Structures are given as structure tokens and as C-alpha cells.
Figure 1 (cartoon, rainbow, N blue to C red):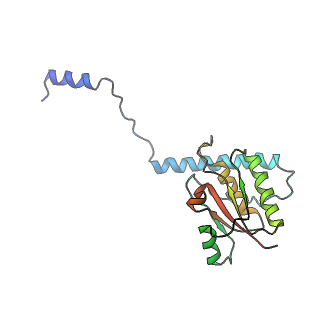
Figure 2 (cartoon, helix red, strand yellow):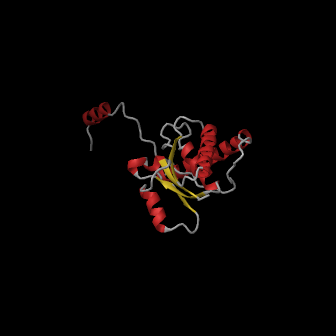
Figure 3 (cartoon, helix red, strand yellow):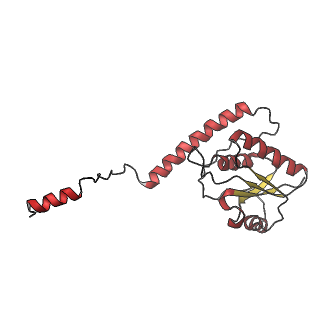
Length: 184
């Protein structure tokens, strides 16, 4: 049993304490909710982009649905028939980087135009191995990497992309992609 003196001492020590709020959802549920919100935001951004970028002559196929990726997730895409050795070189970054584009500081509309123009120009110049730096989206107001997800979506829809994957850590890691283009 607690004495009145002990009770008074205890209450004086915890008078400023705030009760902990019990979370309604687990961390995993919150992450799923954030991904759903991010996917909804991306769909809305895509709709706005389609209205605003109708002047772009090379429009990627945007019918495919791609899951939203987080800042530190690596992205990967390959068409069928790409040799395993080529993919390994792409992942390790052992190819000679023939061109590079940095999308830091661009809005999603600007980044999409720059990306399509850059990849198209590289393809026309017969460049096979290129890199795009999209960043990890740590400063994004949307709470997910907008430009990274845009790059992931757009590259999948361009007809002359054979494969792409996140760069090795020493070359940007999850904030950049190495791209393999078709031969002309």
C-alpha cells in the first residue's frame, strides 16, 4: 500500500507528463496508407501533365501502372531477352557512361520534358549507356520522391529503353538510374 506522502511525491514528479497516445495503426499500415496517398497524388500529377505537355512529340506509354517507390527503394526494369551479363554490368555501373542528366531542382513537368528530350537525343546519337540523377526526394513536399517516381514511370513507357536500374551506391544509389538504350 502507498502512503499519502509517497503518493504526493509521485504525483509531483509526474505532473508535467503527457499520456502516450495509442497508435491506431501499425507502422506497416501507415506505410501502406502513405503509398496509397502517393499513388493518388501521382495519378493526379499525371493527369495535369497530360493536359500541360500535349506539345511533346514523344509521349511515353502511360497505360502501365507502376507501384510508387520510396526514397531508398531501388528501381529496376528490363525487357525480355536482355542477357544477364548485360544487366549485371548495368547494376554495377561498369559501362562507360556516355551521357548524364541531373533533374535536381526541376518541377515534375520540367523534369518530364527534360527526361524525354535527353533520352531521345541519346538514342538518336546512338548512345547506349546513360545515367539520370533524379534524387531521393528527401525535400519533396509530397512526402514521397515525385521525380524518382516520374522517372520510373516515364522510362518504362519509352519504346527504346531496354533496361534500367538504380545506380551503385558510389554513383548515386537509389537517387540515380543507369539506362541501357536499344541500338538504332
